[in-house]
Length: 71
Image (tube, rainbow, N blue to C red; front, side, top):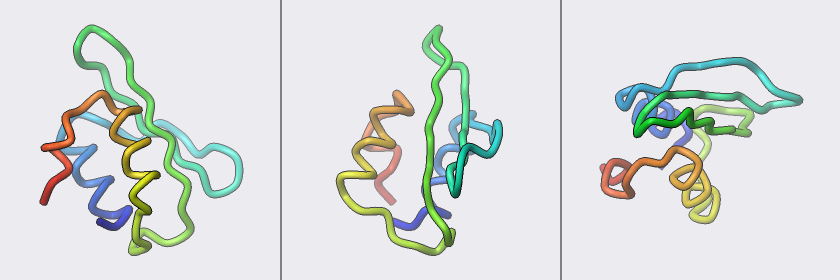
């Protein structure tokens, strides 16, 4: 899965781009399940592949099900 695909999944589930962080970090936020969720992505190219451990961290940060990220 690439970062572009991760961003698409996040946006389809109510996340929106909030701001740029330090360096190449981008912050996406959403409000669901009665909480505010923040996902921090760090990449230089949207077509870059996401490492498995990083994808697990993104899934935990988002509060979404793993099934949502299966494409």
